[in-house]
Length: 104
Image 1 (tube, helix red, strand yellow):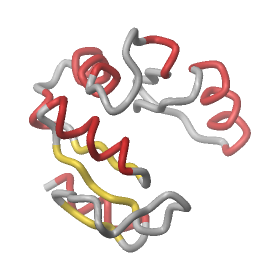
Image 2 (cartoon, one colour):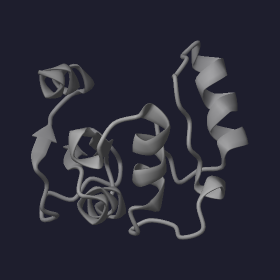
Image 3 (cartoon, rainbow, N blue to C red):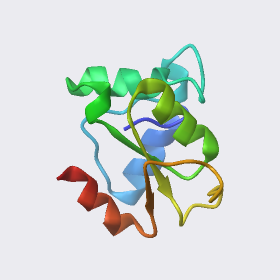
Image 4 (spheres, rainbow, N blue to C red):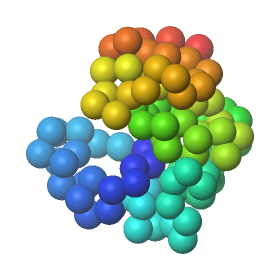
């Protein structure tokens, strides 16, 4: 998982929600913030997969631009508060459950 938030802040939110992730990359782990693809690339590297095999789901235009910069799949989270339908995305997800279709 990559987030522009700090790693510490993201860990606190994940813990409070009872969620665990195999890889967590925060904005403080990379030199260049979004829309650079550095965070997505680092997450892919830590997962041991090619960037093109990664789907980065985000609600902001910067998230989608970071996915493009990394050579990854950009999926727009249309339920998010920063979602902008005018921003190009490889996929647009109306609700979180639709992310499962990206796994196949």
